[in-house]
Image (cartoon, rainbow, N blue to C red; front, side, top):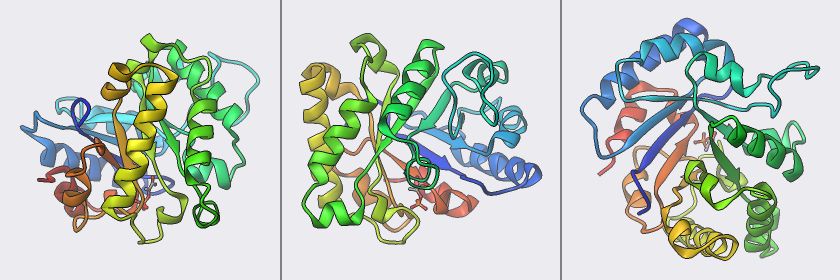
Amino acid sequence: MAGTPLIAGNWKMHLTRAESVELARAVAAASTGLTDREVMIAPAFLSLAAVKEVVADSPVRVAAQNVAWEKQGAFTGEISPPMLQDIGVDMVILGHSERRHVFGEDDAMVNRRLTGTLQFGLSPILCIGETLEEREQEKTFTVIEEQLRQGLKDVQSDQMKQVVVAYEPVWAIGTGRTATKEQAQEVHAFIRTALADLYEKTLADAVRILYGGSVKPENIDSLMAQPDVDGALVGGAALQAESFARIINFT
Ligand code: PEP
């Protein structure tokens, strides 16, 4: 286990501002007194400021679901790192499979976003993961290594302290089909070795690697028991206060 376990909820394009505030209140209440784990939620952009206010007196961290790399400029539809910092948001999910597969973001763009994010002092969660076809063709490790190498291009060792990696097999996201704990552990261990090759072992041992893909109350305990699983990135099950509270309180 590297660092403090992180349980992160990705709310995707769900919930109005009022609904986001209500759920954030419940997450803050469920996180009260937890000192041995970190909790993070990533609402839609329009709800970030309101959610940030609601969790201000709690340990819950708030993240954006994407961010651009420049301070300002002609980037219609984008949000800049300083805009997030202006409302106290210091984490951001990058390279989520929906950004890659629905919106066509490639490794080069994910890397551009990630290096920009780091320059402004935000912490990125870099999402990587293979499709079902790639897994069936036994390309999982090649794909993961490539996404990791390209996503982290030009990221210096001292910046890696800020970076979290999330392994999210595309075939497990929103499908109800979770990777087995053995499949998750195998890829997480591979990611750690790849990080050690890119940087050094002590640094690789300190990077948090989250698992994402149909995490639920029923499978969180066994996933978190794996030696290289340092947390979870949760989609669907993060949208209900009760199920997310159970996931946060994994044993
Ligand atoms: C996600 O959105 O990152 C995710 C893993 O979704 P789900 O938990 O619904 O599979």
